[in-house]
Length: 332
Image (cartoon, rainbow, N blue to C red; front, side):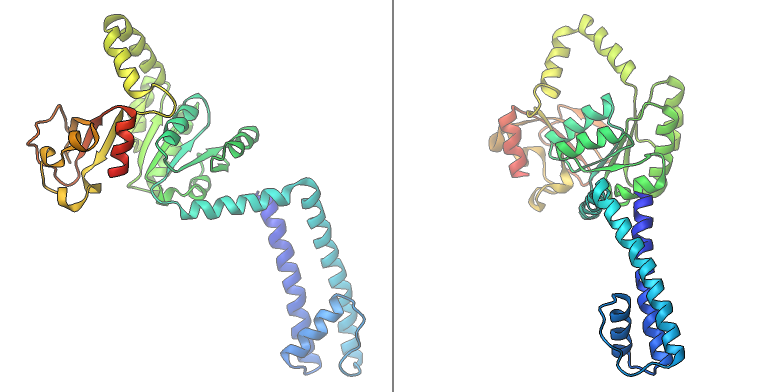
């Protein structure tokens, strides 16, 4: 897109410069007013054949010849470049890119996903199930075309560069998931993202144990090792199979259902601020049950007491059937 942008900008600058030079030239040589000078410039560069406002002097004729030759060259280049974009489809890509930019500029608290590999794809499916705003950064043109078909906002580029992150709206993003295959690339993304947005929650993929601490130091809030998680999961299916299958049903069963939900106390209506879990009365209103509580210090309480006070900055973990979770989302 950089080449395309530079050509379009060059065309605009050349055409504007030609009109400006012609207008200023006629104002100085012929003492025309701005409107008359602009009129003479336009009829000259477009070669429509209208006559001059008054007979030209030798200097004015030489300037007009120069303006005609220059305008023919400039407009010939502009028509050639425009035809090239139209035939090759680059013009469509340009306007598509501009449309995506406008949509991303409107986003607030969205999630950026770097890489549409196996892990990135799974993350995007989960985020879409929760109706989260997503922007994907991907370098592969074929994958970009697939994302366009799926209606997923995307930026084609290298996620390790500041420019790609800025185009994806990192400054207004609430979360960033980097799932690139290389730990070194993920490290670059984490460093850049943390520098551009200090409040963004960053989750990074890692392949090696040695990368874990480096990514945490670089600014990642969470570091996930898919291979390690997969091994732990398989071992747990041997030691506690029923527990693991039950948890799987809660968290990953189906593509459009959910059994667990997180509620921020700050998002609750003011009447519930500094009240207790009992006052919230989720069981009666939605059928859901509060099974966990995270205080502002990020300490977790499993199966919290009903008299626990809901303080600012805390979160509730709620369990329910899919239809109950939907009702919960409607209320809060």
